[in-house]
Amino acid sequence: MARLDITDAHRRDHAHDIGVLNRLIEVTLDSAEGYRDAARDSHDPGRKLAYGRRAEQRDAVVQSLQNALRDLGGHPGDSGSLLGKAHRAFMDVKHALLRDDDTLDGSIRNGESWLIDTWEVALNDPDLGESTRHVIRRAFDVIDPYPGDREEHLLPPEDGLRA
Image (tube, rainbow, N blue to C red; front, side, top):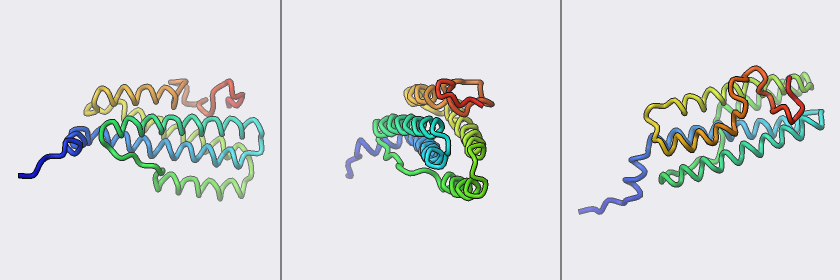
């Protein structure tokens, strides 16, 4: 009789939470990479600095999600989504043609809106375990420090870049 590996059983018990966490890791990696691209492409030194800080915040969120996923017996992803890569490639072309920070700001607003929607869907998932929901809630407070302020969610006011 084959012996059941406890880690496999643990992973199966948390399969849904593992899937949700992996999805959030993927989209948050997309966001971090988008901010790194924006920092690289911006002509404004203040924006470069602010975008770089936001990328670092996203990286820290990814790290906390990866740790939570490992605690559930999962194997965290370490790359963004294909859709995110395609969007950044499109924005690279658009920015190369237009060469302005307004293009970057618009791209970031669109990305932030999509990112926040994805996180809110996860938080409202009725099948999510409470401990996983708690991890996601804490991380979401970093992702969206100004809830309800969608229109102005480009960067926090202390970064001096509010639209």
